[in-house]
Length: 138
Ligand SMILES: [Zn+2]
Ligand SMILES: [Zn+2]
Image 1 (cartoon, protein in one colour):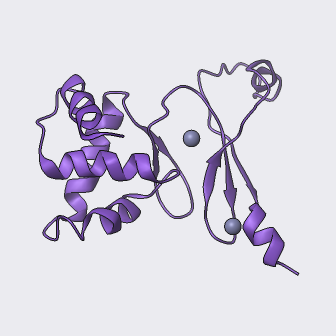
Image 2 (spheres, rainbow, N blue to C red):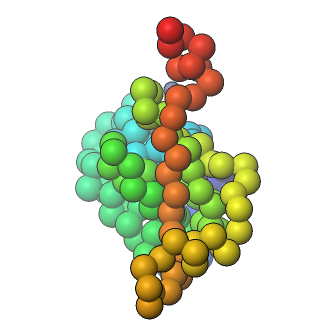
């Protein structure tokens, strides 16, 4: 993500543009589904005074405005610039999270609900071992 793109995204979300917020977005774009701590670690060399609260607040504000997707994981919330519905796979050894290239459509969800419920959205996190960890696992 370029600086211009980050600035545009912040403006579209109605957020004040600051160098730290631009750095948060660029760090988010540079990694697959990072945590707030991961983003902070990436921007600290350039912005040593940045606190975790700044990162959290920026991500929360973008998530509220539908510009960033927040995903629950055992490491805490992970963030995603891809906001349309999609599902994830997580490596139980290294914690890496990636998008599932394909997922069956919405129909299956309605077959697993308790009687009387309706579904409006869901998140699936498939657990397993990534290609790297599988190759070192014995
Ligand atoms: Zn792994
Ligand atoms: Zn994703």
